[in-house]
Image (tube, rainbow, N blue to C red; front, side, top):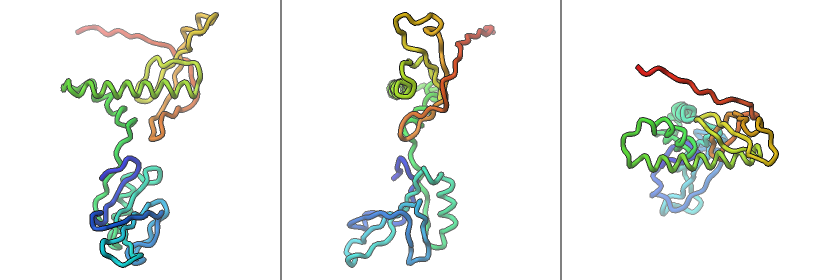
Length: 198
């Protein structure tokens, strides 16, 4: 089963155990292999086994420490010691799915999927607007791409026209904890271009 924040290697079927525990790293397979503390070891007590007996049921590789390729390499390098099997990559976060869907929406032919994707885009817009308010104050979301947002100043009484029309650009990333911005707001301008119709 894939998990949102960790790559996983199943060593044994969980149905063969009656209880589980987790450690960060540890000695595995009778000490033949030592997992580093950046790997979560899921220990299982075998059904009907003696009290206190536990064997490794699965290994989890948190994405903050391990890429999918690194996890696969570690398993390959340690297969002779018992770490065998296929890595299940971590599932994509909602933010990563939204960014992917921006490109998909334009090419999508199945109208039943369009409504679902539009709901996700509305969620992204709301998340960006909320993060803009928290990070920069009185600005509104004017536009966004998969990597940048454009914001404008919220109108205030007696605000000079130049400030009302000003737009600012900043990069952003979607992470498992939300929206993070790359740097400060930089003033930008809207440019409209025209192409000849062939």
